[in-house]
Image (cartoon, rainbow, N blue to C red):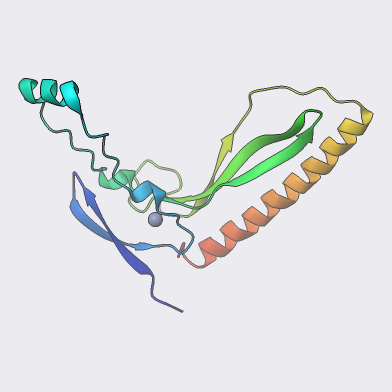
Length: 153
Ligand SMILES: [Zn+2]
């Protein structure tokens, strides 16, 4: 078994935090989001106001490992419709009240806007799509069980 890769994240409440990076993490949530550099008159105005610099570093509890999103999609009369997006998540430094603690879990982002009309053939395609979606969710459940068995690494 290979050693997990370590990453460093600069936090505003605990300084530099070093933590293992799970293989499945995309790392997108570890980027420190900086505002667009101010240009022209906005920059001049900010300088004149002596706007204090904003600290965009995350708090340690805001560090999140996020896996790639898995779309759960079914067929509609008007084409494919995303029902939800499933994503592996882990909060390596959770607040004490957070239900999942440091366990890996699935975040299901529900996309419930829009509507579609079905005839009999369309309903058959919907059934097929829902069964395929159920198979995808089952695969994600197995992946999550594997990750938890391995301790989230
Ligand atoms: Zn990560």
